[in-house]
Amino acid sequence: MKDKRELRQDELVIFNDALYYMKMAELKKACMLLTLPDKGKKMDLIERIMAFITTGKIIESAIIPQQSRAKNYPHQPLQANSLMLYGGYKNDAQARAFFKHLIGEHFHFTAFGIDWLNERWLQGNPPTYQEFANYWVEETALRKQIGSKAKDEWKFINFMQEMNREQSDLSQRELMERWKLLQAEKARFVFMMIELMRFA
Image (cartoon, rainbow, N blue to C red; front, side):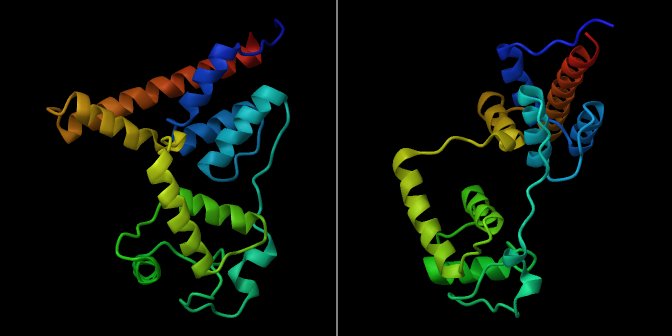
């Protein structure tokens, strides 16, 4: 067997981008081929794969500490000073209506809001509903001024929007077929690169 080879920088960029197109089952398979743990959310697996390939280190999924978990507190009603706790809070119609009461009718759930909430949970510092509302208002105003970059994990949404702009005559079925072909192409590239790293 020849020495294993590392990916070039240009290959790493393409490899990283391709991971975001893959299904959970494919990411778990990639972890298995690299002898990595396959527990966690999609972003956990992607970050674990990239960390291993670039540094050789194995990172585990971040664990929500006890002080952020709902089971360690009495029931938190929907009130401004109540804590938003992991295992208790939900992005549902009731929460949306409450935030509209706190913020205004323009409120909607956002990826940046969910990311911020997860960061606070991981820090062991769950916010109150009012703290979340204050953050959402400030961050929304900031993003209106400076804009925001589409998140890597929004590949499907970005693909659909781009195709609707460029080929608006395609049916929903044709769009889905093209998405599946693109997804399969990205997965093939990832597995090909993994095989090169393992057996080149």
